[in-house]
Length: 170
Image 1 (cartoon, one colour):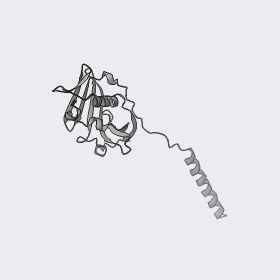
Image 2 (cartoon, one colour):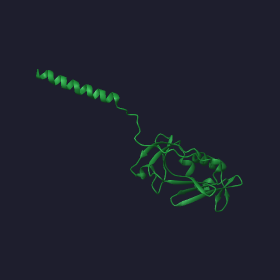
Image 3 (tube, one colour):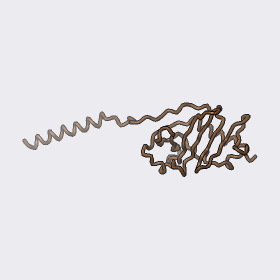
Image 4 (cartoon, one colour):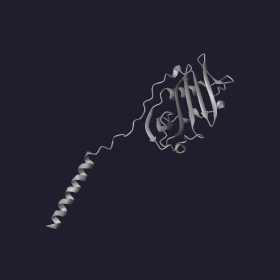
């Protein structure tokens, strides 16, 4: 009789666990991914790239891009790639809230800070870290949140060029 009661209790526990696992929803996110406002890439008039304390400023004059302050012409294909990323930056997943930025190359020594201006106002600002192991995403940080996100596409290489790498040498 005692063995029968133990089997019944064990069966009830197993049925309870199976029911819990069957109805548990594992596909829910417990955080919100910010939706970035669209930025018209054609309306951007200046881009600032800051890496390791050095700033490269690109400005648009008469439909051409120039590297300031000396006014060297910039390679339009490289600037167009940057504008494409700035205009269509899409966050796909939150990666970290821990503020361990070195792991994603978002520390002060490794990150690239991008600021895009329309007229005189700041349109978009974000920090670029390393490319994700999938090679289909890049780690980014939005200044307002302090969280690390994955952005669609691998684009770090477009922004790590210095003034010499951005010059139009034709």
